[in-house]
Image (cartoon, rainbow, N blue to C red; front, side):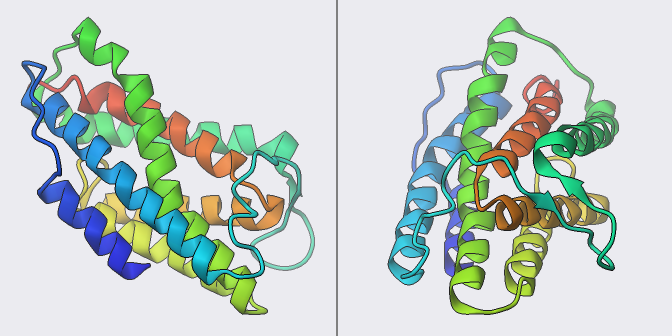
Length: 218
């Protein structure tokens, strides 16, 4: 799966497509990246199906119910179906603020076309990144080991590492934030045995981030 991650990084810098239907280079680059990333996500799902012989793609479902286990100790926790939106909304607020201030020096120019693209790009990016960075590691960890650690650690560290060079949030702050997010989303797949919260929280985070990314002036 690390090779799939490397392939995603490759299509990020050298996309498969060169469409330029918009005046904004930022939006055109985002379009070509998202389209190029979809085949990589398909490859990740195919490899997961082939290598995780017991679970395969069993976690690729919309189950949203499960115990939210405490990170430390055995007491506390909650339920995903009742507590996930609150935690996710806090994450969305943090990502929005950090993204805004990282891109603020270049300024923003909001255009209705760019605003209209926020939702489809957010959907594509959330699905692609969860299919590459989270679902395979959690599935293979649960399929091949008796420990929860593999899926949590890999779904966190790899995601944080690759986002060091992302658009925003990026750098050291962005890497730490992305690693923490990756841990939480991997935990959601493990504990619900489903894809719902990982996708939905990632999608709402993308809505916040892409509002500023797609409408930046530079």
